[in-house]
Amino acid sequence: MKLYYYFPLLLFVFLFNFLFSYSQNYQFPENVKSISQIIKDLPPYLDSSATLQADFNSDGLIDFAIVVSNSKHLIEKNSPVNLGIYLGTSSKIYSLHTTSTSAILPLTYGMESTFPFSGMNFEKGKLSIFHYYGEEIITSIEDTYMYMENTFNLVQSSNSIIQRDNDMLTTTEVYNWQKGIKEVKKNNFHQNFKTKTSKFPVKPLSPITKHIPGTI
Image 1 (tube, rainbow, N blue to C red):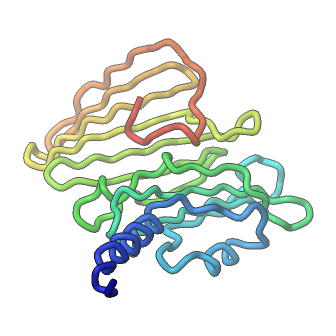
Image 2: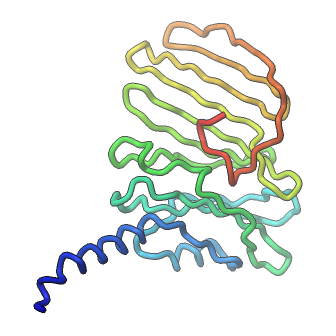
């Protein structure tokens, strides 16, 4: 049988493997000497969207977080964004502590090629991850995690909706998961509305590996 009879099947197999390679989870190495070692060894279809160095677990050693995604390519907008957190050791080797494919939203939440993830920050013992996406209605998310009992747990969520066609009316819900307190704040170009505070039952803190930004 001539080769062209097999061409559609070969093309299907090639496309399946090609698309699958863009959507699969990235496997972080268990131990590395530096952030640059991870970046240098990334497959060509992935890149590092952000890195952050700080002492996450307050042991006096520098740790780091790195975000790996397919933000160079828009073939599969739903492909997971991979977060890896490494803790420093006395042997000057960084050891992989936590990975998550849910803590950072994929490209599909953005508009066209806009990546919704907008950065990370570490301040006063807390790791914050930021998202920002949308056009007429803009969503802004800040999730804050703290290292407790060998786990990075969600301690505060701040979710904002900004309406551009309503004098940039911004409604922000802030959840303090440790204290069980919710605050709702509103403001626009003309005024600040009175903040409403309420309490809710404290539940077990959600680890960074399970939390999805924007959800309660």
